[in-house]
Amino acid sequence: MSLEEKFQQASAEFQKLQLSLTTAIDARERLEAQLSENELVKKEFASLTPENTVYKLIGPVLVQQDQAEAKSNVDTRLDFIRSEIKRVEGQIKDIESKQEKAKQELVALQTAIQQQSQKPPAQA
Image (cartoon, rainbow, N blue to C red; front, side, top):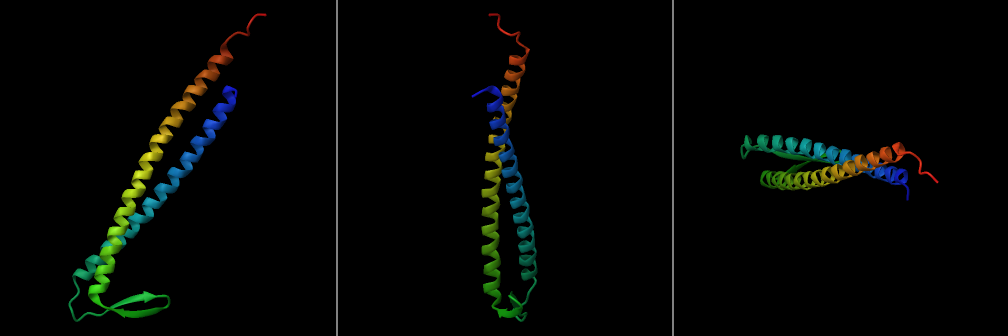
């Protein structure tokens, strides 16, 4: 395989890693939005009195829900979202390190290609 082919292959791999990184960052941003939304709900629940009624939206219908159950659901959801954020951040770090290695490989291949093109042709 020629240096140019290796460079093209490494470049394609780098682009795949960039796309993966973008996808993972988007996922983290969505999770962080969900986290702040659920933390806001939890904060609102803290101000409820036992006489307040809690409703849950199920499709187009509001269904009455037990306060304790609603609070428990929000706490469970918060735990899940936090663990997902940690998992996605781990993915991001992994992709970034792979991306850095791919970048170094691209630079090395580009340097080798430039050196090869600058060498005078071999004398026969």
